[in-house]
Structure formats: C-alpha cells, structure tokens
Image (cartoon, rainbow, N blue to C red; front, top):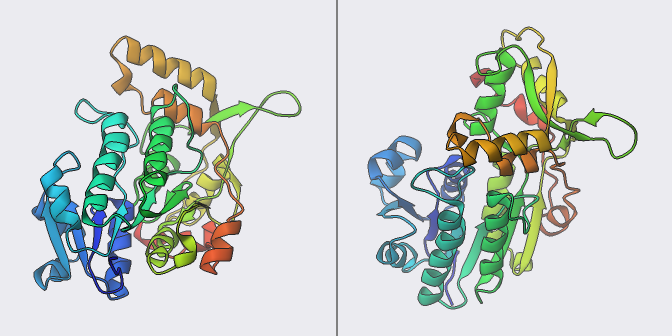
Length: 327
C-alpha cells in the first residue's frame, strides 16, 4: 500500500486556480508533487519555479486522454488529487470528455499503480443527475466513478470558491467596477420566491481557496475521511448581490454604486438553449447549465468538515480583506 507521507502526490489540474493553492500547501507541508501539465513553460509561470528546479515538483507532460502520461504521473506516488474540470464546453473540450472520461482514465491509472491508492476528488456543490445541465450531470457521474473505483477515495464538493487570483473573483470585481458587461448594473440569476410573490436572489456562502486547499491536503493523512463526501462552503451566507457589494466595499477606490438586477434563471436557461441550437451559444456569458445552477442556493452547514477536519471555514468578508489590496 502506498504511503502519501513519504511518496510524491500526483496532482491533475495543478496549474489551475485551486490547483496552484493546493500544490503550494503540499510543498509547505513537506510533500513532493508530480503535476500533470500540457506545458512545463506554463507550469513555471504559475507554480513555484524553484520547486521545479530542485525536484520538489516534477512536471509530467501530458493530458487526461494519454494513458502513458497518466501511468507516469501516478507511478511511485502515495496518493492522487484529481482537480481537472471545466465550467463551459469548448470546441475541443466537452463535459463528458473532461469530467467523465478524464476521471475514468485517472482512476484506472491509479488502480493499476495500486488498487487501494489514496485518491481525493474535486466535485462541486449541487451536482446531481440532470440532463439539462451538462456540468452538473457529468460532475455527478465522475463522482460515482470515484466511489465505485475500489480506491481509498474522498470527494470534496466546494461551493463558490473565491481568492485574489480566481476566475470568479476577477469577474465579480469587473462587474462591481463597471468594467465588464452589462456595465451599468450588477447581474445575477434570480428565482421565484418559495413563499410570496415575485423573484429573489439565491444565497451563496463563498469559500476561501485557502480553506479548500487545507481540506484537500489534510484529507491525505486523515484516515477518517476515506469513503466520505464533504460539502464545503464559507461560514457566511449572502444574497448574491450582497456578496458582490461586499467586494465593492473593500476595493480602493470604492466603485460607485450600481443597482443589482436579476434575470430569472429559467428565462436565461431558455435563452442559452436557443442560442446553442442556432450555433450562437458562445455569444452568451453563460450556458443553460450555469443558469440552472445559478438560480439555486450554494450553501452548506459544513457539519462533516467541522467534525472530521476540526476547523470551521472562514467568513467571506474577513477572507476578502486578506487580498483586497491586490484586486
């Protein structure tokens, strides 16, 4: 049986937003890393170049559809952290190929290396069977592959992840500064109220990327997390527009106030489906699945995280203050 305490940790998606923070935490705790990347040149720009030079990070050239690259990636490793995912399909990358086929490929490589290898899997809060929402559906099926693998798996389902170098944070800051469409107002997906008349904003509890990294890395040495799935969000809940205004409050100079206007998620989903049918889906800043998920709450009580990891994720506003001067 592999020992993640002494052997390198294989990481897929290590050059992405969350992956960069997880690798930094792995290094900080004394682990060595083998990271799958299409380009060592790109890896050097986002990871610790000195750690690549001194061998603490080994860059393994390849992709999830290259079995030889995956075998090399996991060879000799004590554990694998699988992070690769996309939020929108492109001409060359589909949800099915990346989430389902990619997970199946890395799981099989791990099983060939060690049938009981430690495996920590990135999923997402709110995933489930849903043929209308490709991201939600394929992320769910990827998790099922992990659960049936025979590996010593743990699945982490973060909600909305924030941090100074994250894609969502960059987009949110552009919105509140009026530097990205729709410029004149702050957009969000709304939903029909459960009680009463009219529409309301969904609630979110953004989780700080450093807390996400902590859960992934701590899981490696925490035997109690094997065979479990963890929902992970921040400690504060906000209506979506309130969360965006919290960003605005901590920017310097503080942007001028812009009204928040919600687009009903079912209207947005119909628009996205129609646009895709006529070949214009790429012109919208969202797809059907994003609209469907955007109309739902992204919150959790973090009960299992608090119990098994012994810590409470940080509050949103306090963690934003740690990096606001870099926005």
